Image (tube, rainbow, N blue to C red):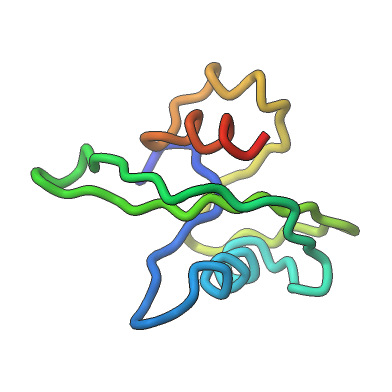
Length: 106
């Protein structure tokens, strides 16, 4: 969603497992390889209405990873990134349900 702050995300293709897609998106969007991340927690699936499309909803699979030795290389999908305290998320214009996802994971 152009112009909004978001976590790393993507669309599951075919019969992919959500965790596989999450790791793939981390690599694609940040350049961080799987050996530099550790899954800390996963949350229940969340349904969220899409403001972009009428009668459309997203199914969100929340994951929380820790990262070591971070060197970020953004791809074409991103303009910038920031590491923030979760309590500061309300100061940003975000994609729908991001605050809810963070509350589940943190």
